[in-house]
Length: 284
Length: 282
Image 1 (cartoon, rainbow over the protein chains, first blue to last red):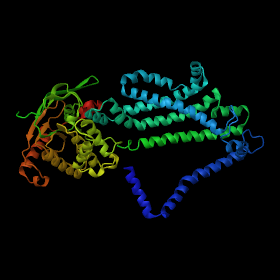
Image 2: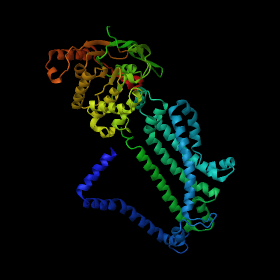
Image 3: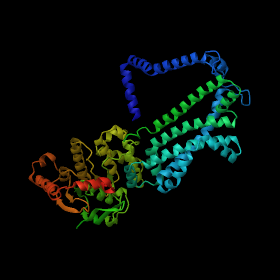
Image 4: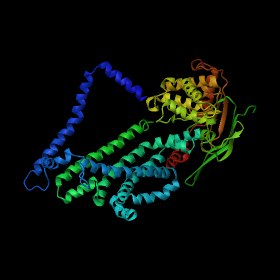
């Protein structure tokens, strides 16, 4: 159906020619691009003014740019040890998040389905979940260091344990909210457990699952920075800590901007995948 | 009974909820012949949907039995396909895929892949939806969704087709149109059908027999009316037919004189306080 629609709209724009498309592009530009650019410029101007006074504790944006220019233009340098470019730092953090988050997705959806399907499991596990999910991510770090005796798996475990709760909870709500009608359809068709899981349960719960996945990825990115500050090694979190110890405030500002942009990108990526996968599921 | 294809024997249904027992159905006995079109009519809350769900196997009766073609019904299955009131198509599947899910599941052994494809398309064409195979439910109208629901149910080649107020959510024109389609398909296939309705004209127009239920709780079958009108039936011609009007009056008299819905305020309040399963089913 999407192809039909797409070709339809394409033929329409072809019929109208290029001019109206350019016009609407311009319109879009004014509507969507101008406001954030204006606000950004204003904020930077205020920051510049506030931090330009002599003796200001924090660097002004122009100062930041001057101090970090080498880091910005050389994201991929590698002088060995912890002294690597910003891109490597971020990729190292992303790798940890990828491991921890993937584990959380698999375990979270499985547990969520279990809790959503079985009232007994829900009654047994829900209190445990409700208590554990309130434990702050970093509180898990010492115990996981003690358990794993190594910093690498500990960081991944912290990501895992941070991201898993919203995934479990949202999945179970989604599974519990599958309309009775869909269950009845499955019963009349005599779908077996596997068919029910793949054909009815996953698609019906997908919008809920993806909202859990989106919250989860945001939380894991929040947790990784804090965890890396403590465990050290290559990673954007430790980079920030290192810069603080060396009093390189400008480096910290640059790192914060990168952390923000990557977090935003992760959120949008999961949202995008969710939109593609759940297309049509939300409406009935 | 000469040809008892489906028989509902002494079915009772009692719901238990929060310490309150509500008897919804009491000693329901009904036999249906092969190829017969039966309507069940009654005021809302009389348990007609409950009865249909029992025949479908979706809920289990407290006592009594449903026997279809010599076998007792105790779980849902494709031999008793249901057209649900709110179409219940799966929104993430296209029209074609919705029917395919049913066909691939129920005809996996009897038909090969090409035959199944043909069968899916044939059933969708029969309900006039051959043009919209690749559309999703959200992209088609309510009447069209119900057509697809009917195609899905027919494609399972059920022994008995169960229609749960299939046209209830549609506007009057669409409803009339779909009724015609159902009559045409019924003439063609000769299915055994049980239809829940609260529309008197619909019941008289479509049915061979109308089963009229008394008001709940403890609803029973009040009267059964044979509709002896020749088929194919034409709504406009029948409008002036004295027999048609006589049948109509019989049903109306049953519903509005003998079984007038009297709900005292106190009753309604207590019903509102306890939205038991009965309400949900009705």
